[in-house]
Length: 263
Image 1 (spheres, rainbow, N blue to C red):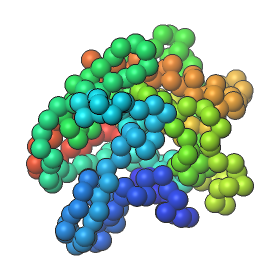
Image 2 (image 1 turned 180 degrees about the horizontal axis):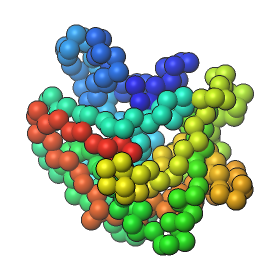
Image 3 (image 1 turned 90 degrees about the vertical axis):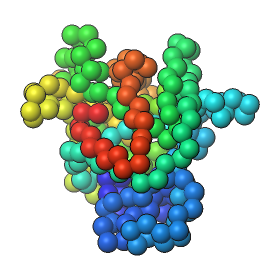
């Protein structure tokens, strides 16, 4: 499981939203509503992640059907103990009745994106890397990201930026003594940029919501969480501009495979 927390799954951020296939537990069943049976899993009460549960701002009730916000831009990865998987697969089994919604970015720029209900949005880390200045490229290619210990428990009470790629710094993260015991060998320190083994192109691929520190090439460590988040947001925000986002319009039976270290 890409996001699993072996110590206490019930404290894991997404645990209310995750169910697994009994005979293949690394396969998660996601959706919304009651499912009588699927692949041996019975009487499932699925709850699809919604921005209301995690965002610092919400849309007014009268606009909440027509408009929405991105839930969270992320990498499908535990980022503690296990390396990020190379690819993620999603199979569409049953779909809601199709209608369109408008995603608001709500960061003062005025960006919006029309998407079908239930869409999963993808943004290219390669395109984001291409958009950087030469100075920012040098910074990103020489900096490593240290992810938090038990990252999804650590940030479970924090709220997301309206655009989704990071969190608001409000001091809601858990202290070390509030977390499960830490294994120093499991703490992940990963590059900002990942190289595609086929094309050799670099992708700026960081899970900003659970980043804790930045390790610079000169040995400096940026430990101030608000500064870490500000730097990552400045680098990543251009890559989620509406014209650069692909929101998959699902049909039943679609099987999507995406490069988890590049999208």
